[in-house]
Length: 549
Image (tube, rainbow, N blue to C red; front, side, top):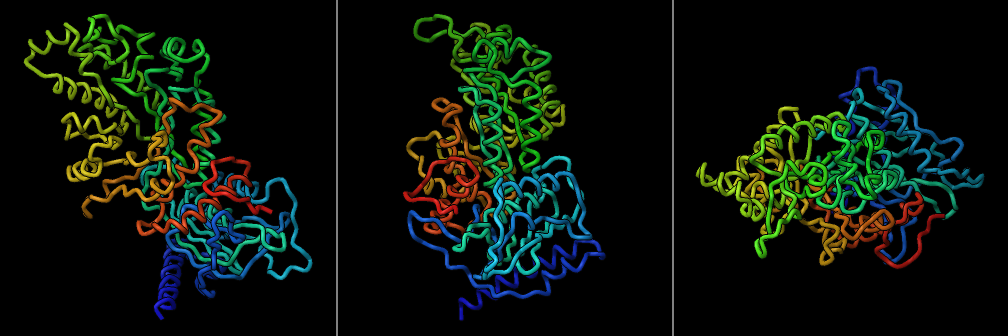
């Protein structure tokens, strides 16, 4: 009785969701949309295989949808007849057209596979797509990614935005599989889905090793398969400054690897940003300042303090910290941000702000003289420095994000979003920040270069908002995996990121109650096979072979 009641309740939720979506579309909504409401289906949960080391013959979805019911009824697809098609009352846009073409390639590839003449299953020839609102120019933190997917005799995908269409088609593509009769098939199902968190990211460091543009594009493609929606691009650091600025060409010329040849030019950035946008992914740049800037000192030493070793008094430029007392520093940062805004359309910018060396400052005689004269401390100067950088961002209507060092050094009233990365009582830090009404991004559980925690199940069970009061949950924007590249380069970055980042992706998308490791292991192993089918090679989590037909 309890099981039957649960199935009935899930069915009611999905039916209500479909009605809600249809209610928002114009009164001229065509008959196909209404079919979802009128049609009934046997909402039996599929009997997914639990065999370790094997893959399911019916499709499974990663990350797990918020609500999904399905049954054993199967539909088969013909590569020559199946198509995506707008409903008559749907709005249309180029982004959705492009997404349809892309997923036709993902589902069928370059192969031709027809339905067997003796097939036992019904043919599915059209997945109708209904877009409720005009397409947005660029995804934002508030963009809807919600969708409803129904696969029955009439199949339908309904979404408010093109981003929801993208997420829904990714789900549909993962449900498609090769059945026992060697046909392209999909099981009957009804899904209502939306993300738990609006910010679901991957941070990629391209300063310690240069990551070519093509590899970044491949990373973005895999991000879309995992429904991640933010690439936090950590472009610069001590080791290199590979971004070319038109106003300051000398920076990359002297600061990039390979004598200034390993650089990202304007055309590279535009290509990356547009490729990401067409997959519903925002690109947020980070020029890490005022610390982590030794590569910048190679072209602009005038912006840095003269620091000295505390052991032998010899000049030490390795700390790479800008001079907080030099007005030209703030003018320079403002000019950098202005050019960044022209390259990156996102409303957010990551300013860095981590690991500023007070030790460097205190070895400077100029700095010590200023402290005595102004009767101030290095912490107060630190605060002044960060505020100056934040003002430059805000003046350009950019919303700054900073590493939690800013908060840790006593700057508790920051108008910036704080990324919590440090492992010293991070849950308390998230709680303190949200109590202070500060927006938070969580990354401390998902450092992909942490050899002690490089296990997918540990990352999967992380709790990004565990100690946040209910009234403050809206301040946890989401989280991201971080791929630092001290020991990673183009030839291994994909396998180092995936599938570990997939574990974080499900934690950030799916319900808080989605914690079944056995079910997750089966689906994550299946995702490995889905990726393999798409010619993407990620690290497997189990022994066995992929039954990809």
